[in-house]
Image (cartoon, rainbow, N blue to C red):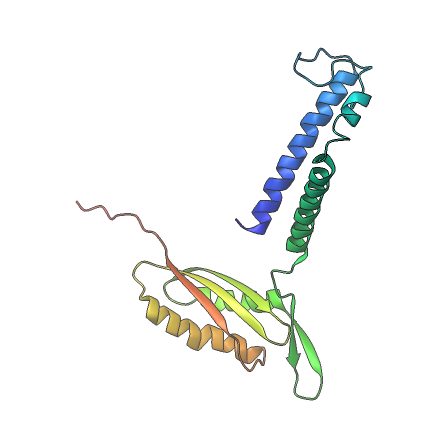
Length: 193
């Protein structure tokens, strides 16, 4: 599961849980009739009674279990934070202009140019380009969806010789390593009469 989808699922579940619990506590506080199995039954009921707060205090397993649970929650939160903050895309590329100075090229601009040139190639139905790596040494990840009649080897050779070479030369890069994923577009069966 990709991180973006995981974020949406976790945020939706956390939001739903907080909404249900908050709504139930608000309803109990306003005096709405609550089911008999619910923790709080009326507006004067406390969230945790004294007996509930001190129930497990003297058990040997209680504090290690609480600390282990909190440690797991903190580690999961840190993992989630680093996954969200980690850059997936290369935002800019550092280009040597040849006169001892450098210029910055937006990564999205190179991605778009590479995708458009690959999309004009005969037999390519759809392209997706993603630049990763460092500003001085980018790598490309390309997905090409090919029409059913196209030979994958020919399409890959044409893409490498034309679009990828043009992108590397226009950005004045010594190398532009690329991982190309080829997939065929599904087609419907032809009707024979």
